[in-house]
Length: 465
Image (cartoon, rainbow, N blue to C red; front, side):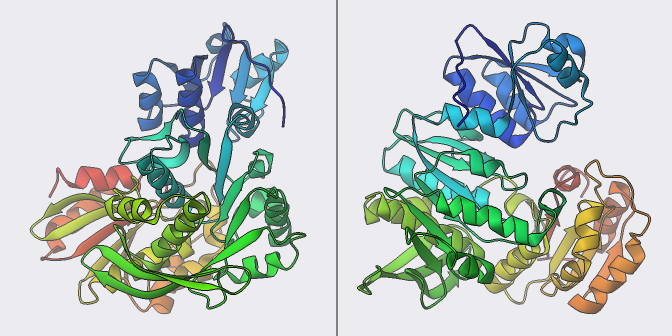
């Protein structure tokens, strides 16, 4: 805890306000009555949402942006040579990381922290939906836009806060915890942690922070998380998954249209078992059943009635960029998804395939970061096995320097070989559009996947086909 003292007459400037986490915190603080402003290199949906509630947004980073600022909040994406950051240091303004400010803002709430390598955003949204349905009016800060509130952030008057916590830079360890969910752990963000061992140590610290009055809800389907649990000092956790030893074991999964049906066997720590039948989830895929089960476990522990939980899951309207339907034309459906890691891509394709095994799936894949693709190229090469065609777009560098060792043709050939599918390379958006104009037939399912420009490409296809 940083114990930051902020008066309402302060001017709080967010450097990098367009980031999903930064924009969420800025909106919460504005609604709480703080004087908030921010800057970023370009405007986007996140900064537009901030502007709609009266936050002053400045495009570009220049010294004059901080002329009236008294407190600085910086995104972890901001480099040390940023002109606003350097000027703030010269003026000796207090400078805080986003996680430090967030920790103090939610210190008076009871916090449910959702973390893990994959599934955080959807899981956070599911917990928030259930608590909202239960009239608990939670504060929400999420890593994606929740369709039901058309935002990634909401200030609630209730006692609870539901927060997606970023493990990428260790900042999730700064947040106060009452309850938590750990979805999984994967070889991600090793540029920060330097080794997978260090990443796992961070998760051990996180779980050990759980107080005696709360619970950590941990996915026991994840082999590394099972190993981590052996090193936890107390038994203040519960497990969930398809695993037969899980406290919340998923049973009898079925897919009907775009819904998942499943049952749960609930086992407490003295081996008493209860079967809860017929959960209906308005999402597809085993990964989303896992996400929903963790949300169920948390909310049952909070005393939310089962009827309310079931209603919330059935009526859940999803998260933007999580298999979001963009448009439909001549029975061909076009979707947009944030998946940019092999585990995420495999989960999406598996889920879609299970709903309709005979339907042709076209993956429009935008590789993300040279470091990720080079480290996980073998994993990427195997994750498209449920895709009938992969259209590979140019790599989105996300600020990284070009790596000459990355050869897109060799990468495409590796995917074709190991996923046993056809791979087509396009050089730009124009080539992608021309391909679809000439080659689509009927009933294909097209999924754009990536964390860069691909979302805009998928949206613009609507006006070209």
